[in-house]
Image (cartoon, rainbow, N blue to C red; front, side):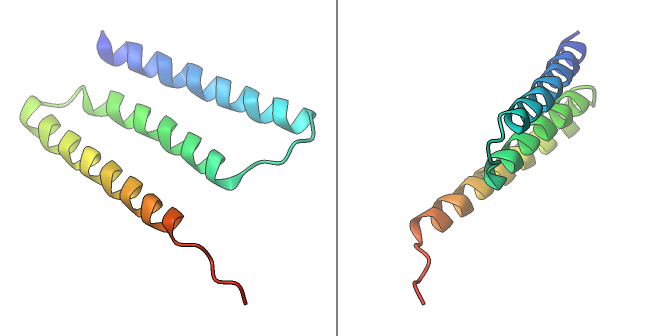
Length: 89
């Protein structure tokens, strides 16, 4: 039941994301690459989480820990990159 709900939420999020892209294009506003990449990553994470919920518990724990560790490393890398200012030539 939880798996079906997560898949439903992921599908609705995909539709909302596509609608947002169309809305922004219709208003002729620029897209930020990091915003698009973040939204795609979140949607992919929701689908991945829904898929892994259907797996066995010991394997699920290992995978969720690896996903959380990967997310922490991604946020750490983004934080470090944000702190560094590009050098002016």
